[in-house]
Image (cartoon, rainbow, N blue to C red; front, side, top):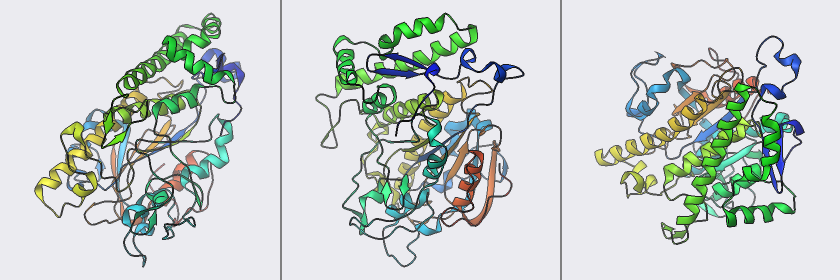
Length: 446
């Protein structure tokens, strides 16, 4: 849902709205009188399916991060930016009398802490998710209350896992107990959503014109941008040029993917225009747009599913032609365990890209990553066992200085993951006494 935004932070053109990042020239003078003004805290949840190869995920000991296990090694240069958390669990994702369907329960429960009603019909029911608790309380402060993105489409009806609706396995964001938020997977659509003028009759025309004449959306706000540049200091000017460069880079990548997508087929399915064939490129492109949305304060809350729970797509980018879900049922076979580890490393490489980008963006009183809480992981630990305790999780970013980083934080196995969500909501200025199966806030964190 779109919200009102301060006109001073927007460049306008025919069918285009480019919201700007924080600039000292646009900040109230009172905010700059003593030091850099506090910037908002952002919160993101990044989900990966089918568990991980836990032998190569968990650091050897609690305490300070030293030698990282193989799956986390892509994050070696970022050890001071994240912590691994062990022992947290989603006990409501276990069968608890409902029989098979662990994949559907995994994603449905991950941010809700509520047992999903077993149904493939329209009477789906789980619970409101942590991101939407925040969106309902503070989402009015930004253009978009929250952002839901992913890299794999999923149906919101039908039977996808042992009698569970497809809505459960393709959604982690639930704005009510019966209403999942559909995620956007097409980068072009997401870009136009972020920078198009909603409800503007010129918007569709400007999109067509941009494509026909190979124009940038920045060409449509050039007049406003030039006026702005005359009032900027050196630091602001550098920041705005870096921001514009990021937008141009995304536009160029979209153009390249769209040019090659006309005759492209993936797994026998026509690829929508603007969807990269390479899965890593898709993740990185969507991640870059999430970063732009945070940078310009278009939203402060996001969920990002790298793939749907139970996904069986192969990873041909790393020469794995077997389906991911099939590999996750490894039965301790060495070849499948090796392939599972390689997929997990590939996911972590994409996470490292996102974190690196955020760690280099000036956010006024630190970096964008300094002012973000980003939880990465999933709702299954070992894909072969389908267990939902001792989940693979890491939290990145300092959350405005409140999040402990560079550590392996070990909690008693079975501690509700929803306890962590209460801490995260506190840090967003959202007070909740309980969420799902929470039993209180985590100790020794935030």
